Length: 99
Image (cartoon, rainbow, N blue to C red; front, side):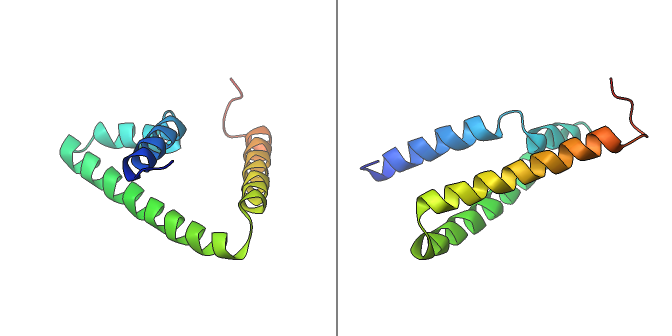
């Protein structure tokens, strides 16, 4: 990405695709059923802006200490750990029907 707007475009596209259909989207839908839409939009935007600011600052600091390749590897391992924990919980919980 060579321009500022190119960075904005690339980040927007990546984040839009990554967020589409995830838990936060469904949580936002649920909130919108019981709250004013503008309040839900502003709350969701504020939460995402804060979380992403922390990620950008943390990523910048980590990028100075470790390589991007190592950061991606560690991120992948963390996601796999969460996936395994979620699968284990889903399999072992008896209070929720399987299908």
